[in-house]
Length: 426
Ligand SMILES: Cc1cc2nc3c(=O)[nH]c(=O)nc-3n(C[C@H](O)[C@H](O)[C@H](O)COP(=O)(O)OP(=O)(O)OC[C@H]3O[C@@H](n4cnc5c(N)ncnc54)[C@H](O)[C@@H]3O)c2cc1C
Image (cartoon, rainbow, N blue to C red; front, top):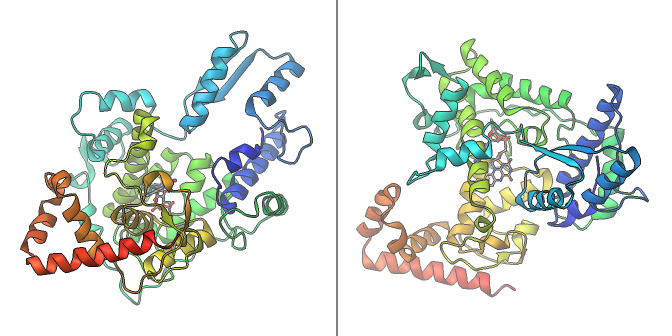
């Protein structure tokens, strides 16, 4: 196992993410050793850290006389490309690259599903996986007579609802060491380390899972799309880091949620909604990534080239929703999917921010009134020729056309003024 500075800096990862990954690696190495495995571990600050995966593997092979390398396929195109290249350059060794079991659908299965389809709809992909794995199925039919209970999952959050608390995993000695290391080596990266509380071991991840199942799953569906001021977690599970790191397997999480429904401890709309995020969205987004990379990363369908404003790093903005989402991201390295999608993602879309510039958040912006409304309608008007045929946008365009000419002009004029202010804050 090898800690590489280049992996921490090829983009400037949030400091909590660096601590999470390095601490989880160190804890895992310790567990393996306790189980009797021989682990060769190169720390970031080791004097002989060569700075490259390949030279580290080669030096182990040279020292041990091993001829056979078994590794899991990297989760990023960039690394997979490097590893395939390295594999081809070294026919003298047997190098087996195994599929990543942190996902349920292999690249090949996704490609076969996508082949010859005019549209790649997440919903159909998700149904197929449900059938394949027999999740929420009853005699070949979806449990409850329908595949998707999203209509029941859009309830507004009552003002007096008290949110569940979240387990706080206090940093142990290993994590404290890593915190010091990250602060000294990557102190200039985005994020605060004060509130580091992520699960870094399987034991902690299992605690997080059972806490979620007990305290949040029953209402996960009802308030899945909700947001509330100063409430970063709501009924979300906080399990993405553990699933991504491999501390939890996605199928065990899905089955644990299914079991709660089978035992009558959580309603179907909640359990289906939760399972759809993992079995549906998580697998589907990953499938698209591998299907379309490497050109996927540079697609820019709407020709958006505006650079990101600096409040993406500082959270210093009068736009309250963005301020909340970005400051929570700085403090916890977390935002739930509605914040990522509806607030930050929508802002980027509506404001025409360059999709490739996600790491360049250095512009600063000042705005006095919430511009989402005018940005939204201006965006729709600007892209009408491209978007109006989309069946999901029919209602939106009917609403736009119902507005009188003057109203449309006011909205577009306000949007232009706001967008200009973004360009002028460099
Ligand atoms: C613009 C954008 C960027 C995102 N970037 C990432 C990312 O880099 N890494 C990442 O793991 N997730 C990403 N997500 C998905 C999602 O926002 C996070 O997984 C989720 O917020 C993590 O919080 P949670 O574990 O409390 O999720 P919960 O709401 O409790 O959901 C349960 C699980 O379902 C999966 N999930 C939930 N929502 C989504 C979604 N929209 N797409 C895919 N999987 C989902 C995750 O594994 C999550 O742990 C992104 C979503 C959006 C809209």
